[in-house]
Image 1 (cartoon, one colour):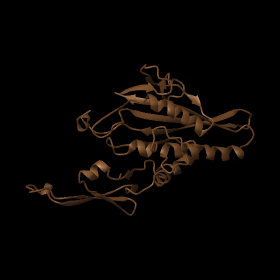
Image 2 (tube, one colour):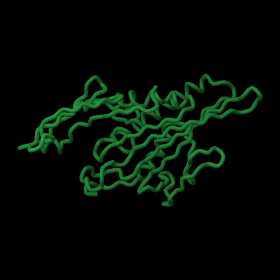
Image 3 (tube, helix red, strand yellow):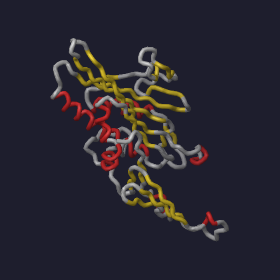
Image 4 (cartoon, helix red, strand yellow):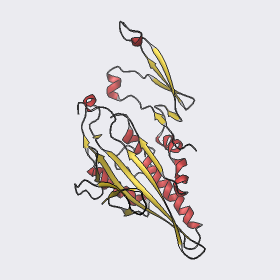
Length: 266
């Protein structure tokens, strides 16, 4: 499985765009290629203003009829086994304001705990499947073997890090752990989470505290990068009676809009 997988998703036209007479210009071929048709501008003077067709290839491509479940199963679900095997995993949505990042990552609502909802996004689907997989692992675990999950939720706003679960308003410092040599956020609240429901509770708290702002493109645009961090501790008993601990981390990230502020009159 590749170290980095890039997928693109085409969102449907909004009603506002349809009312304005806009038309679809992108289509998907073979599940990997995106074809963009550029229509000729009125009274073109330059060759670049004429009609053209461009084609781009990705690891996965989804058209505007693709379901939330389809996107999740082809982009994220295969990597849950990597997390359980001790590898770090990061999934994030990137794009301009209004492109559908939060919808893809969370679902119809920013506090989506409806795991059976067809519109549930990558984050709730990942949590549900991860804890199911861990339950299966625990059922066949050896004596003394444990799987434990902890969670933190933070945002990056104006290049500063804030805790979304325990929002003190203080800027948190990023530093290197003297023992593990890993990069950590000092003072970030970490909670033990025994079930997906316990993570949904933290998401509810955190998303209420996340910074949003109305823009020309989106009335509730996310103006910060939100990072849900799950840490899996796998504890095993060694031959000499000691403990061996494997720690792996999954970062599920909903980025802020990638456009310039002037593009959304923000």
